[in-house]
Image 1 (cartoon, rainbow, N blue to C red):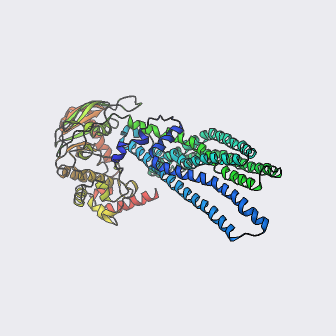
Image 2 (cartoon, rainbow, N blue to C red):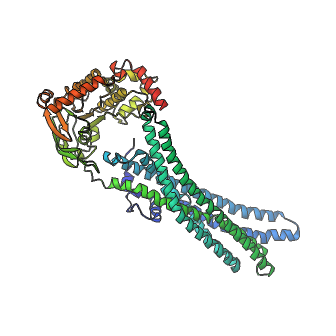
Image 3 (cartoon, helix red, strand yellow):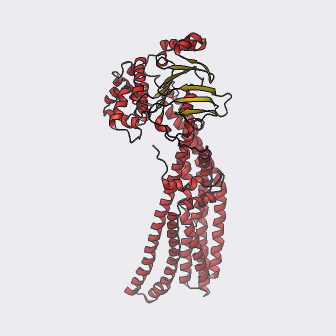
Length: 632
């Protein structure tokens, strides 16, 4: 579970709150990252600066040693101990210091890079948590995973070569000064080569921007298709659509392959050009330098110093190429991630100051309406309902009548587009402890790949083992949980794949019961459970949750009869309300719907075998579910 931002993070909004548009220049985004991790970034730049200065100094030391040690030794035919010691301490000393500078640069740059990724990914994930359900319903989860993973890394990849490039800039400054101090002619030879490298790097940046953007889009599409394939594995297998699903994923993978090939082809052209120019430049230095030595203008030691310095400068200059390669990625990654942060920032400010008391809570909805984005008609229109504290209400309606939307609105997950929902006398949008006092269980019960105890407690530290055990007992889940190989410590599989549908629903109900909420909304959350077991669970629910108020979205007569009153929805409106017997006698639509449900259930598939036996038959069913989940 994602923990809230630390207090220090709340005081310092960092990159997520930077006043940068999604199309902000990569330079501005990079500068924002520098400000965020300025301490470690300064260390990395200092290390890179030390490397640059010491590299130039190395060339000077080598030139001096050639003049003071190598030339006399060759002339006299003898290398004395003093000469050898001079070579060792001068050259060894500068190399040792250079190694220290490289270590500082790499460690500090690595920390900078990983801190930026961690903080940005944390904020993207927090935005996902804050954004309402209707936002998630129109954004594929695979694409969201791609945003939080590869796109975030793409933004900050530039911080791996950036300190090196800054060190290289200082190195070039010192290097060109040193070359010109040795010989002006050789200095101009160097000036011809390095501007050509910069021009090639600039061309590379322009071409690579389109290639990188296409690659990132293709990568996100592969993630989306793969995520849908995994989630829909049961449907794919049941309908024999493995071949078509494989073909769909293959098409996406081939598009990513082609995009990456185009990316690699561009790099393949760029690399030989950048490698060839420094080599040609070194050759030019040697040729011109030989002529200068022959004319007596400079010494052989001067040529060695310049040639060595030129070769040292040529390779680090490629760091500018890495920067230019990374800059388009910064812009593209930011363009894909920033809108998510903006969507979360644009949410109305939540003034969650009210606190709900312990015990059952009164529920009241007044004029509640809701319309999905780009929908032709509203999902809810002017819904009014009231449930006294400790009371119960059944919500009944045909498919598409707005029952599930109403359930999400009542618990505050989806703010209404009009009207207000009050719980305990407070607007539910302004309740600080809403998550602790209001609970929702849905038909599609989500189970984490953790133990049953961890699934029920769900990180709530105030829940002890005894409360978890009690919740499992009330939900009639204790029997099949204890039958697992490791009992309550057994991981339940991804999305609860080791359990049947009814078992997953009972784990989800235990999760609700354990928190003892004041308001419980059950959105067809017992549809996969045998009616007899369902009745026992719902009957004991009130006592287990200390008399909580209950709203049951249901279609079974057995569930509806447990409620004090019934609300009947048609096309998002309250068509009728009252007791079940009153609606059966006075509203033909309601009576016809209940009759149709009963006929459908009588003619449909048998209930879950595990639930018919109230847990006694769960071993076989769970084993079957586990086998099916493993094959999927």
